[in-house]
Length: 253
Length: 362
Ligand SMILES: Cc1ncc(C[n+]2csc(CCOP(=O)(O)OP(=O)(O)O)c2C)c(N)n1
Image 1 (cartoon, protein in one colour):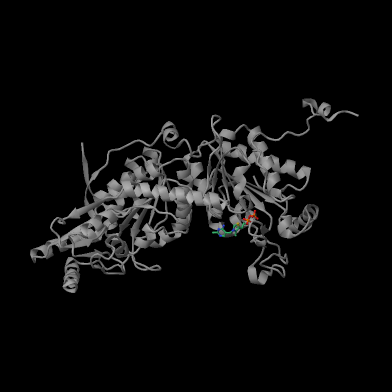
Image 2 (cartoon, each protein chain N blue to C red):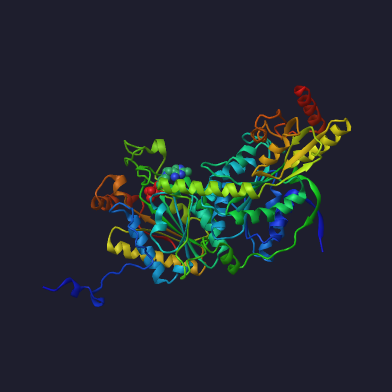
């Protein structure tokens, strides 16, 4: 039998950690989509060779600490305000590649005004929108994107749309805005989905390099802790329940 | 050669911003300060200096744009009036917590609520005690003339960068709207990337260079002991600010039995009140705090050895008077006088209030 040390050789490498990722251990729950999105984001930044030119804006939510994981300059924004923060960075440093990374509570509830107006101005930024249908950080409360009938800690009997409105398809709303250049909805639950999502990210970062205006990437995501399901079950639940409401694919551009 | 102009206080804020090399202004319209953004839009500084001017969707967005710009080491500012400044408080506390330099202008109007569009000084507490959540302070400058509206823009940016702390110009509807002769500042170019690197290169997010670790601008600290340490760091910073940056002006205080304490437009009214009272034989002077934070506490305390009483004159229900009382520390009587709700105090009303203070002391 071959020794492990004989197997670990350059020629046998099938995976390499991006050098844009730091060595810090991620605080995300096992199975959470945030970690996978961070990974492909780091890979895209490395492959496009834009590490020195990228400035990230992290939100309030589970990914508030995103700045611990990617070797780039970061700003941490107040809850929902990342698009406003990113607006100023992109305008004052027009040759940098600026992105806002936001959850659904951050982007589609408290920060609705900021995202709509940043997109309507066509700010030259990438928006990465992690839609897990729940407030992960604060312990699983209802989000604007929570599905009808879906139980959360503040809708324990399931979301009642007569009381709290419908799941907000903000990505479709944003696609209506003329200054938005690229809108797509992705997921990261299978290797194929991860590859597609990475391609979308790459296109978005290339587009802002060419100053094409706002790039909006929704990633329909799992929150197995909040959903109270195993990681595997969460993926299945997402495909069955989230995808019909939030269908995959490019919406614009 | 010095350049003089007759200008409104609000217009001069815009002019001074362009001239001092401001990189960005982000605002939202509100009376009585809309002329600031209007002047900028008319002047189109982006063609002249490259300064970014943007009308944001709200005051909330505007102050967060300031956060983003300041975090890049840029000279950025916003302006508003009372209701808008209330909305900005979230962003201001994040800016203070992330130790970012910026300039905020409040052209105060009467409140609470939507209140009135007329001048008031009722945002004193909000300005000097913090305003948003958490333990922090702004450096607060109180202009009393259109000239000071001009001068405090550059001073404000200088202090903001010196201490990595937000600076507030606390003005009011009188100073913002009135026209006076003003000597304009010299035109200075905006900082180059190399200058920004020199001034803020240890912390600003300008893109990670290969020769340094990446920079993070944040106000988050989940470890209580580390947060406490940061709170102490802020306290130390404010201590240095208190030692070095107190600014005030005295007017006929040398022989004064009584001292009026007033800032901004009220101090102008009080100058006239001093004249009227002195003509009647009352030995009264005026102390005008120029910085409201740090407050001229020491000076007021020293004045207690001669003064028999203080009258805090402010267009509020009595806010600065609390700081005067703390400075006086019970040694002599301290009273407050001021009209409210957008009504501007008259010099004769001040003299009458002073008479009452004197009578009470007898
Ligand atoms: C002004 C303000 N309101 C509320 C909170 C509490 N809070 C922190 S994270 C969060 C929700 C985050 O949910 P989401 O944006 O969906 O991101 P996730 O954690 O699911 O990734 C809330 C309400 C806060 N930090 N600030």
